[in-house]
Length: 136
Image 1: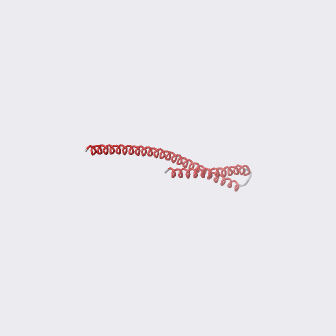
Image 2 (image 1 turned 45 degrees about the horizontal axis):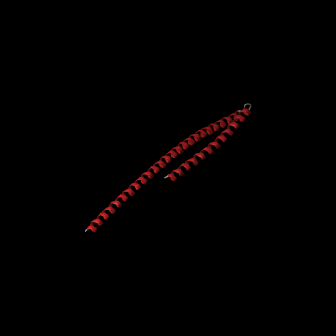
Image 3 (image 1 turned 135 degrees about the vertical axis):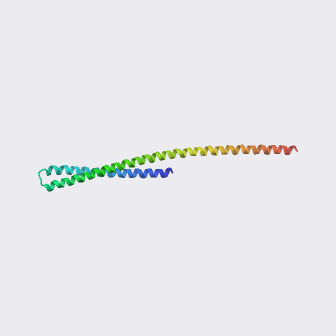
């Protein structure tokens, strides 16, 4: 169980890292788009309506990238929360396993003590039987 949980946690961490790398890539693309938009806006103040429409298209693209980045950020947060929950569940399972090991150890010790007492009782009975037979 612990190994399976470890694999699950590792897989979730790897997914979260992949999502974080994708966010970094999207942020870079978004920053590049924002820089291009700023440069284009400065040039377009003296140009035709068709170029102004091109700037509008760039703004829509930038907005789409920002939305995608926000969604990716949200996904990363969800993955981080899931990873934390898995880690907490794993810790709880480890504690339960340790508790069960203690119960098993106590049970084995109690059984061993019980068997030891029974052996002593049987030896006493044999000894007593032997004394009785010997006195006859």
